[in-house]
Amino acid sequence: MHRPQSPDRPITRFIVTPTQRDLLRTWWFSAALVPACVYFLVVDYGTPGLAGLPWFVVHSTNLLPHEAGHFFFRFFGEWMMYAGGSLMQLIFPGFFIAYCLTNGLRPWLQCSLGWLGQSFIDVSVYAADAQARSLPLIGGIGRENHDWWNMLIMTGTLHHTELIAGLLVAAGILVWVVMLAVPRWMV
Image 1 (tube, rainbow, N blue to C red):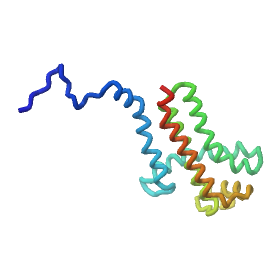
Image 2: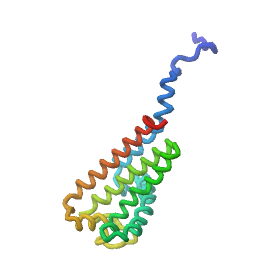
Image 3: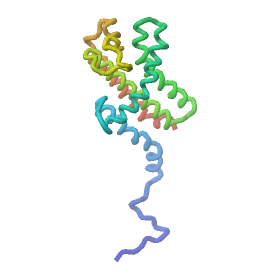
Image 4: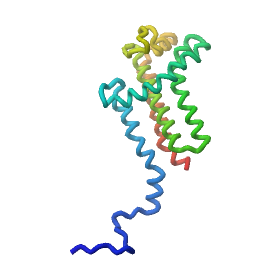
């Protein structure tokens, strides 16, 4: 026979200690961001259908600062004009990171760091395509306008395409590790 619990005896299986409650309150947002990081590492850019929708949305968001970077950096020479797209794509989330840091906005800081990490991954896809030049370019411009192909040809490093793309992925993962650790140093 089952006896109901008395009001002064809580159900023990649902008890969360204050320490556990603090851990949950501190780390739940970091845990919630992990699937997004895994998604961008596992799902290929250009995956069709709903599976590729997050890539499409985030890549489209990154496209505006990327293209603006070509305009702003063109004043510093041809190589910087090509590099400016990827540079601005990486610099732009930094504005949000700086704002969140100075205003103590921890969850938004983590989101901004997540964006920066994803931008590194996004740029790595473009860099990895330097030899094949198979990604569609905005406005249907020709393959000869591929930013990373031009930058690596100009520097004589086209044969290091995979290494450069790998370093960009590693940088993205490093940023994501910092993003996940933010609650450790920012309360």
